[in-house]
Image 1 (cartoon, rainbow, N blue to C red):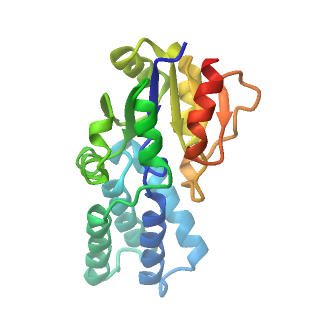
Image 2 (tube, rainbow, N blue to C red):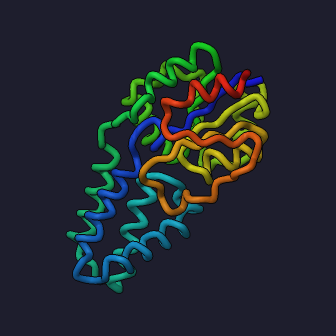
Image 3 (cartoon, rainbow, N blue to C red):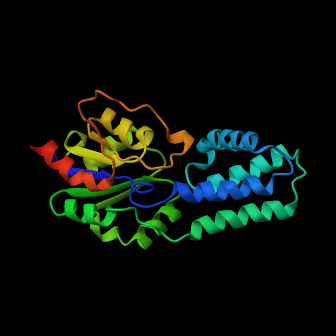
Amino acid sequence: MLTTIGFDADDTLWQNESFFRLTQGRFVRLLADYVEQDHLHDRLLAAERRNLGHYGFGVKGFTLSMIETAIEVTNGTVPASVIAEILASGREMLEHPIELLPHARGVVTSLASAYRVILITKGDLLDQERKLAQSGLGDLFDGVEIVSDKTAAAYTAIFRRHGTGADQAMMVGNSLKSDVIPALEAGSWGVHVPHGLTWALEQAAAPVGHRRFHAISDLGELPDLVRIVTE
């Protein structure tokens, strides 16, 4: 029995990673005189990985990691003007208009008429609230959860709080690591909706063979999948 459907936000309902990639390209150009491009990508990713426990997910942590990387690769000689450019890039990301992905509004609207629909996202609280408000989708959800990380324990608690338990819930998202695998571990259905761009720290192997794992090519296929699951 399926009663509750959870939706990821970034790169499931609206664009997100593309803005990070654009900003990272700008960052590389700013530091082109100091280090080779490939090496800089690796250094930035390493900074992001070690800073997750301190800053969490989102634009602010990304901006701080860019500043830290700029200081490291220049041995502390990075000009203040470059730091100012990095900060400006972070602010632009926080102000970027929301771009809904295809089928997002129609699918959430359709499923909200028959199921509890919950938005489950992680990242900076203020930024995620801003994006939800600008998306125009906020009124469609029966609940909104902005968490520091997505774990099996988090899904268990959320689906107990907003639904009838994880075993009667489905989680839908673009990240196998955050949206699908921990939801399956909690006992839910996990539906992967791939996005063309996936952050390296969100990549994981698909749990092929798990009886509650499904993959669809785009969000428009979700209502048909829900019907199959509930038959």
